[in-house]
Length: 230
Image (cartoon, rainbow, N blue to C red; front, top):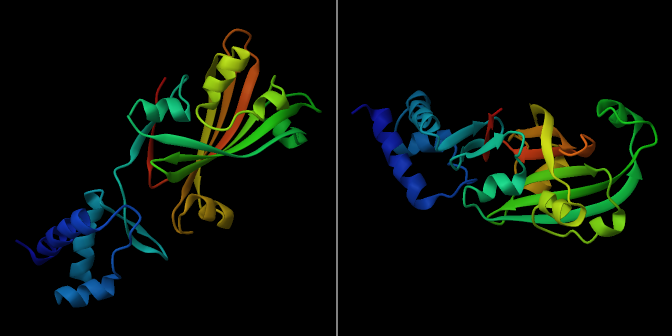
């Protein structure tokens, strides 16, 4: 067996026995010295771990142990709690803000709503197995602030269904990858070298076609893998 494959096998066993997702491997220079090989050979060994999906390279951060990505399907019925509960994952929601405000003109143009439109804006942090994974800013229409201030956890769409009989489907969705802000790093518990996925979603009421929600979610790219479904 080639030397780099032997090193990869040794590191693979150590990762499974002693590391948890988010941990960093020792610097490559230190590992090369440990295994008495040059940096090129050590890098080939790490390449094997990357291909196995055990490790991801982040510029300025190093080689980080990652977990198998969670498959997040984007389709007309998808929402955070619904998607993840189907996979048997334990989720939790923390509401960090709930206010009623007039939305900026630029935002209203983007979602094709008239000037002066108000919305109840709820900011949440979503957790999977007590780990923060997603920040969501919900812009809700046709609701009152008093009722929404009583929402504290669980599925927001289920809460809307129970209190307003809202039944909605996802409309247009836009995605982009970007680097996180300092504040997002603090809230999600990640380094500046780990990208986030920003998703803009529109939800429309099935009965009337009216806009129910415009949401902006910021999720850790090292946790989710997205699939687009009709």
